[in-house]
Image (cartoon, one colour):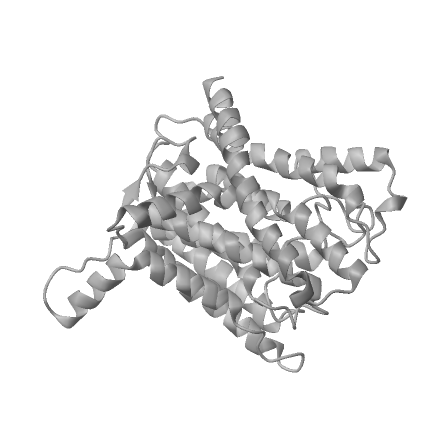
Length: 384
């Protein structure tokens, strides 16, 4: 079922409200995944261990929505108009995340990064780079942990999202469905090889401008974005008509699609690391199952689902509206929380009030940014 969403302001077509809600659930899991980073000694013992897979879910949703919103418009729409639409939709929150990160930077000092050694001039340069989504190279970024965007780490996925938009408009949209299927299969094989036999046993890559991160990030984008686009082309909603057991089961999935999808996202994200340091391939196989099977299936279920109550309609709309702002504004506070935990040598239980304040405060801030900044800016730019 589809309905108009505030988050879809830049596009005239309505959005799938359940998919919007699932994107919001994934954004919430990302916040908790990042909160628990403060207590992980390595990527293997991270709680909510597979929260990084939310990015692959975002990319699949992006490809699906891109195909739905734009594939039938190219007889009248020009490339420059498409790029303007995407900039208006995405970039205001890129700017906001960078500015929040810059304002908070000197409050985030700890043993892992010494912000006191960074001059105002260097901070200004880093802010400008982040605002224009220009990645920093390892060894030159001001935090010293190798991130593309040291003021707001999650901006890395927007870097790849922009690449995906450019590839779509110049190349991928022109592919016939059969050719697109081949691209999806090849990219999926490449990403599976990286996950199972690669250097990490996972696909938690893309955030740094190093060879393996760039390769892994591109494979994540190419598969998931293309897979989402392919799903949009072949999608036929699941129906629950009839009285047979299968028909009733389908009807149940359609009616409870949001809750099924939300529970699946949380569970898939929270599964502990598999295989340890001895068997990287086991965790890589799990990641492959998620990006190649589970997430496409969740998109299909979510797109087929219906909202039967006003509560679910309002909930999915709210989650969809705040999903992108939440993703883009929470991480500067993660740096602050991380520094607080390290400086005070806190356990998670001791820091729980701060973690809860970060979580709910980020949701409130995301909503305020949406209403007071993002939507007004997009309206202004769209009118121009």
